[in-house]
Image: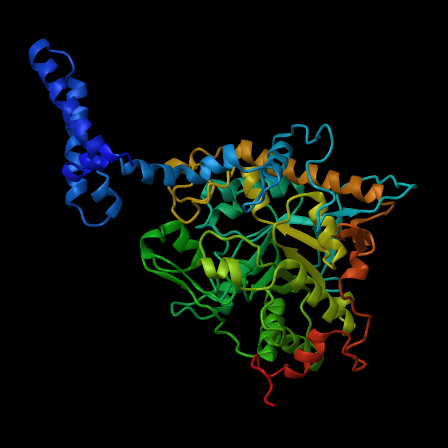
Amino acid sequence: MFAWLQRVDRHFPVRYTAWLACAVVLLLATFSWVAFDVGGFVALLFLFLTLLGLRDTQQTRHSVLRNYPVIGHLRFLLEYIRPEMRQYFIEGDTEAAPFSRAQRSLVYARAKGESDKRPFGTQMDVGAVGYEWINHSLQPTVLATHDFRVEIGAGRARPYSASVFNISAMSFGALSANAILALNEGARRGGFAHDTGEGSISRHHRVHGGDLIWEIGSGYFGCRDAQGRFDEARFVENATLEQVKMVELKLSQGAKPGHGGVLPGPKVTPEIAEARGVPVGVDCVSPASHGAFSTPLGMLQFIERLRTLSGGKPTGFKLAIGHPWEWFAICKAMLETGIVPDFIVVDGAEGGTGAAPLEFTNHVGAPLQEGLLLVHNTLVGLNLRERIRLGCAGKVISAFDIARMLALGADWCNSARGFMFALGCIQSQTCHTGHCPTGVATQDPLRQQALVVPVKSQRIFNYHQQTLHALQELVQAAGLQHPGEISAGHIVRRTSDHGVKLLSNLLPFVEPGALLGGEMPHQVFRLYWPMARPDSFARAPG
């Protein structure tokens, strides 16, 4: 600061200049108003700003405003719009935060039916460590369709032929009624599945009749009694609906594994209460763990019970991988009881949610690659892989994302945020506030009117179709007949400036039946397999 300015500051704080300027303009505007009958609006405006400065110096909540009356509000305004400023003007096309502009633009283009082609070459750094590609063939195939399917629950009374790309779990309550309506109509038109999320089946899920995967969480929403316990009769009522194709027991989710949730009473509207089977206006609690079982054996028996009550529909569970011995305990329980789920969905820690503690979002749970690979390897090592289908979820946006997950062992992929982008989500990251600017993640009736169901359902359909068409082109280029043939030997990753490796050589894979023969092929099995026991999720003593 200049010396003269320092001398002025000792007598009158320079930081008050904006406040002083407001007072001076107020006096001049008032004089003009009284003398010439002009400037009334300006006088009222600067009266407000002058009084605001007075309030700023008296309030005790914000130190910035006490020291910088009036102009200090500019700091809070800039902080408020910082995410949008960064998203639109600063971040690069390939910077992911959590999804890059390139990823979002791809979804928007496909959802709108616009060209998804890009000129002049890739924007990605092909020399960067971690860059991946799929090897192509000099004898490409020609496939008749991009409607790729996988059968789940083969041999059951009601098997389901699922698309390899489906809508991941998002509850009504987290999403608006219009969002649910558009997602389900898009799913119906495209012949793919719509996971309800643990918020259960709402009236909006039923309007268009699209295929549903009914997710049941620890709150047993849609199949609970007044005390929150599992209610068999209510379960049968929903599970036997023709629209419900599969039943999914949620053990944990990637964005906040091991963490329950509470929907505050004021947010429990009559529609939400109807879907979940809870009282209107009362806090809706989703416990961190299940009350219907407490051991791996009990969990599998519960799954078998759900499968029987549903009339033989494919029944499985979803989890994010945490303690490896807990997953191994479930596997040992499968061997002991002979009960196996029809499917398992692996949720990666990179998954999204409407609201989660920062520590959980950033530092709890295994990422999708590690979680999916562990589940796939364990089932292969126990000779159970052919009996159990694997789904996965975690930042799956493009056809290459799908191909990569299939190479790691998945049979199909789910996407939540991809379909949110197709609905019009702009990644404002205000899902938890109820102020979603596009009407996707809000219960505000005025805000959700911005989401026009017929238009957005068409975009959901377009995005699904165009992504699978792109997958078809990848499969053809690789010389294959079906995405299920993509293996870790088809995907290459750069590991250094001068080195690349196939995922099949880079990542650990297990030979069929290896675990049954007592072989512990990798450190994770050698360390944690002995800790697992089928009668408890706790570590075995010793």
